[in-house]
Length: 206
Image (cartoon, rainbow, N blue to C red; front, side, top):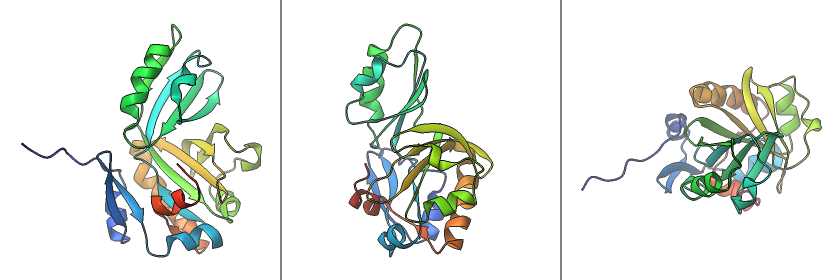
């Protein structure tokens, strides 16, 4: 019997080149840790690859079905559009629940492989964003989501202030590598670097 294929983000080679400790979670290869990554979250800004997160796109009348999301994060982008985010592999449970509960006319789609995901976190988050976008991040409260250009790429952004200021950024997968390189350049200029999931989870992120 052949082994199940490992799911990887578009940035997999970059993580290996940067010395990431890689672990498997729900069939996904995740960058669990980088040397010294916790420090970036408290002194500058860190960049994480969040692509393995479960992502369910809900369009239409979304008020009713989202109550079954459980522990998933409901990122409401517009009154008729939300992105439900959760741990890797949760889409297998979330999708049928949301489809069953959806109002007539609502469209529920597993978007896990459609979006590349990135996390920017640390005390210099706003300074990093000032170099990446004309959008004003102060217009977004923690827990809120919107559409905004990041590095000249259309993105869905979610404010996730945890133990440190944090923004999650989701772009179309085909722009994943370009977006990572753009974000990484700015992060390095500010004295930051890549961070793994273990460091984010230690700050209360899930």
